Length: 562
Image: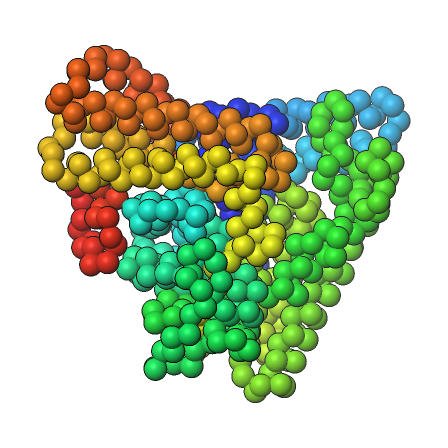
């Protein structure tokens, strides 16, 4: 399972933080990932993407956040990517000339390889995919190669939101965006940061979602603990065996129905995840692989290998691509063997089918872990060569093996500590105070709006205010602060969306309050035009998505229609 997400960065800086985030992911991860899926060998009993007999013997789950979909489908960002990639090709060409003059043959060859690689990916983007990564994913889904699932609209951290209206808006907008982009509703969802609190399954079930993923400890622990769980849940579902009592445990090798709902959760397998994800314990930290953090002082391109984790950046050795390729193939073979071992052990112990959920950020492959794309290709080729292992999407697995047991999940995330501390801590508490105030304010406006008839201008104001609210509640801003990755940038972006939200709300409330002096319409239109040009995701957004204050019994027409 692959999860892809980039925070909203359109017209919000370039380097070191901003649009370059998306362009790097497109060049290093998304385009190569599409290439891998298109190049997979076919089996005789299925049909291939190129029209020949046969089809890929795999089906993978891909989660794409709605805010990422919107940026990938934006002409401004498409054009920006082409220009950025052309500039990167030029830098590689200049590096090749510079290294030729200095007699550095190893770096000269590598710079030349970068030139070829970047040109190939740009050509694939413009020609093979017609500049439409979203459309390419949709075509793969139509062919049964991938199953695409959705997420919350802007990757909002749902357990820490106070208001029902906020949670519903994040989820409903995410589902609507997905259906617009892919022409069909999503069956599953990636909850941002795997963050769950008891009751979220009710929102998912109402929206027609069938499954989601949680971290290992949420399934293997099984006792609800957290600020919204109200203590330990001991209620037993009479129709199913329910895990969640003290002393009982679930397993990540099986899917479970969540509480009394028909929504299924699947837990991340820690062994296979750590083997790939961890730079300290897993494959990416191997000394032969390319070092991500050391970059050339002139071009910013990468010419060194990890060497050893404890080696200072200034003492890293020059990267050898051929050696790294051989190591990636070795690691792919090791991973295939590991999966077989885990499956066989489970089957011998229980006699049951096993589920191994291996979720990774798509940006890991190619961008962070340069050799990861090759490793992925070799792994996807090797796994199906067995009568005991099938690479299938989550939905396909549930069709074949629907769960019969239920589980009571604890409040949890896949962040450090397993709870919420990465997003809520002493350094970010101020952000949540502002978010909760914004939640209450937009909820009041939604309640007031149900008793009034809006002008066109007021409706535009309210929609843009909701857009800023969704951007404000993105989990990325507190994450950047906590992890010290782009602390000042995260705080700046958060405050910008908060200021835009507040001013738009001021205008909307003034227009609704007959006792207040009228605000100049020219002032409102001018500011609205300025903000809309900067922040324009979800063009079909409607303020009525906030719906009633309680999601129970909410009619679907009230969510999607004005």
